[in-house]
Length: 148
Image (cartoon, rainbow, N blue to C red; front, side, top):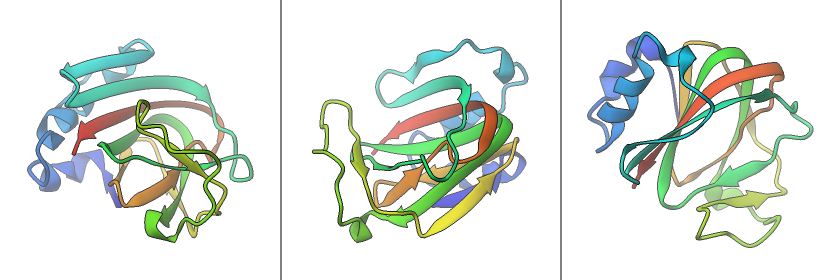
């Protein structure tokens, strides 16, 4: 897991193939105007998902994990908090992993809660289980999916 201000993210533009394209998308001045929904940026290799929804709080946030994608979760506005736990330490699957949707959910509790304020992003690799939407109130965020 990485946590960074978008203004410092140039340090990991080339950390992984697809990061440069994903971070370029986040750095555009009109990002907040993008409509909700799924936006392929490089076919299925880099996908942006724009969300505007209410956070659910820590009690209702559920750990999830992915195998085919790295998640870059950027807060445009609102009070986002995300939980983290190493995927290898998740022992209680909530349901079977969906290969089609590339997602698995867990009943395990996060070990750490991390605030991700506006202008910041959290990067979750396939070995990171994460519980998004654990903040409060309305959120505007962008989730970038970068293929492994």
